[in-house]
Image (cartoon, rainbow, N blue to C red; front, side):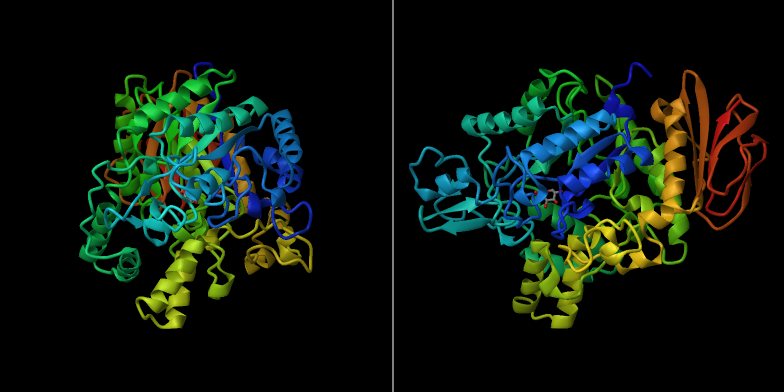
Length: 568
Ligand code: GLC
């Protein structure tokens, strides 16, 4: 394992700072809160933390609209609180990566305030300015992508909310300023960055209009109501066609190389993981990003064996083609997507599916990322009162549904709540306590706590229950850590025709491990031949099977069982 870097074998855990733990009792998560929970994270078995943005922000996009790249949002604490957190995390051998938002700043960032003040100020060219909107481009959050500024009598471009103006990355001064911020955090000792929305950094210089016969609100409405396979196909085509001129430009390679060079100046194998599924952004495998997320794995309504196999086949083949072989990165959920438990449940076997999917992400080849709360089975909480929505892209959609599309207000509220990312960002459920133990009784948390914290979906009760999902995650994580083939081994699919279960080998020089995930309620007896081994020695079973030996000619598997065994 010495040939592997820490970011290849580590288990990452995403912390959403606003919702993780409230240390000062104001209803908002903060650094003292996170620091106090480091022992919990250590005990869970994670090895690296990714923090969603913790920088000062007017919070039009929950921190992804940054107004100062070199500081800490006052509601999260001070820079000293951050440094304490980092020191304490490192003292527990937990690495820390930050969120780096390159595409845009907040419209309250000093750079933008200066840029918008006149046409000839020193930062006049730091953002993307035009005299008149040159095309029909849409922002993916709030309609027209071009917003008027009277001071300049000009328009600026924004891929996201109008409060998130796009930086002009063709300007070397922009790069310089952003690289200074990168160095600021690297100098403090952070271990790397998750790069936000990198695909959107450059746009088509021809400014080619899109050809979709709709605007954003209409497309969202169309998507909400698409039912047939052909409507769904058209929906996907429209989303692609509406935005295809606004992302995915080749210029990004040089920018990623430049950023990589900065990281490589530092010791300790600092790393970059891109919020993009395009393996091209790993360059030659050693000169751009270290990792990109395998989002195609999670982009499905049901994680079926066929979907998983196809995904692995495509991804691993592409990674293998890179001149310096690439490494995968698997996740099933984050702050932008439905909770894993809700997303991949079928309403009947949600608990079993949650266990299978946890095992999937922890046994596939590649670095796994968990999202805070998935370890206790947190679920989506749909906010039906539009006045309580905090995700402004949903607030915008709600207004558009009522005013532009004349949708019935009750229906509009339901749809806005469902599309809102608030549902998967609610506070961590620490105990069967007032506000789930996230913040004190009598304080209103920034988003409501899911009422199911009183029904066993909380950390304290699950810690006391050896059969809980939390203990299941811990056992799986321990198995993964102590099994070299699961950390670094090659992946070889077996029984590739099966519809109900997925089976694969993970093989490293010292070990061959068989993983079987039974996605069906049926018990089965399976036969594995051609592995050169005779016996499967149990390492882990979700069915509580004792760690006995089973002949490879007849492996018995329970309903929805996860079975992991070393072949001998
Ligand atoms: C990324 C973030 C998302 C944010 C967007 C704009 O997709 O994950 O939360 O809204 O970028 O920064």
